[in-house]
Amino acid sequence: MCNPAIAMAAVSGVQGALQFSAQRQQAKTQAAYQAQAQAVERQRFQREQSATRLREAQDKEAEARKMEQLALEQKQRVSTGVTAMGQAGAISEAPIDDLYAQYGRVKSAQARQQEFKAVGTELALEEQGFGFQQEMMRLSKPVSKPSLLLSALQTGTQAARAYKEFS
Image 1 (cartoon, rainbow, N blue to C red):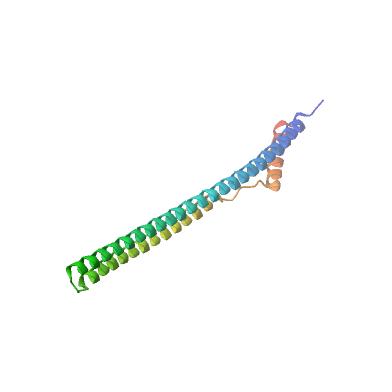
Image 2: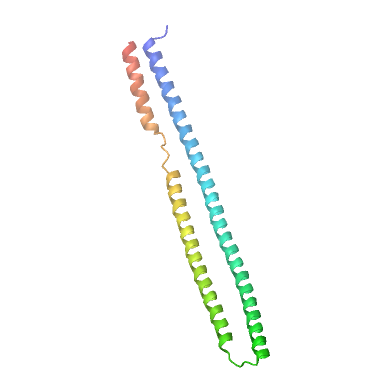
């Protein structure tokens, strides 16, 4: 006949082995989840950065077209002014100089606005980078791996208690 103390000690040993195996599987699953979450975060960050750069390129292109249109309008105004002065018999270049000065001020203001937009874009990209770093740190918490020695000691203690209780 089987000694109940030995049987209970054996059951405790099996339970300890199963518990260690479950903890090891949980650690592997958690590590795999973290790796997947980090990959997804990297993709999200890259898409966010790409979208910001694309918006920046679109803004620059739109601004360049606007400046081209402004230059064409400027040429038309100067041509119209020169023609009107020629028809009126005027010789003064002051009105033409005023048109060029106006154009210069508008062009300068738009250039400053583009500089401000560029600074804003760089700040947005930097902020996205900080957010990415924080999220990666959050996702990179150490995975608690089970210790075979600790599990063996716990299992041995439980088996000894079971043996003592049933003997």
